[in-house]
Image (cartoon, rainbow, N blue to C red; front, side, top):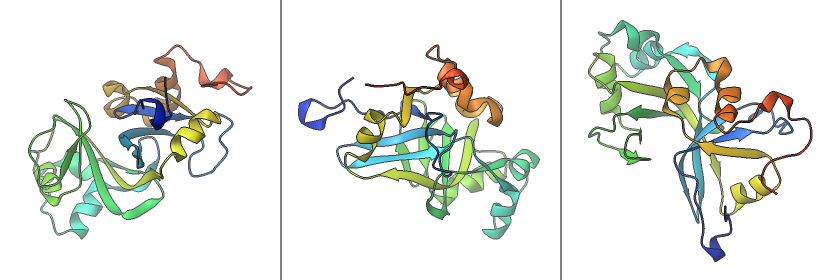
Length: 192
């Protein structure tokens, strides 16, 4: 895979970034990040395996959104990353038509508008969704350097991992998609 934009870039949209065991930054230790946007200017992703001690119902109440769905009220909320932690992001499928959405793939979108939360609250939202506060961001060339330095392993997105796999299993499940038992990696490995 080519990561140098000057030589025909390969961008990692709709992929998982799996923190290598050697990545000890507490903000990203053992995380799986879903990359929503990656281009020559940088990257934006949502961490999908860091739950916060808050249910979606609490956020909906704070926003004065009427809740009719017990599933929505009890839905897990994730810490999507260290940037703009007061801002909400919804990864969902199917994509649908919302006020502020970005298509990540033909089946998954990232939405930041209130209308999707209003729909979720009454049981009329997307079939599958993940709500996060904050995001992970990288500046121009930063993610590429971190991958070359073996901080991250990238794999294709697996919808089942994104929406259905128990949170505690997402890190190892994402790596196992490409035949890697990440718990057994003790020496630097990855893209070299």
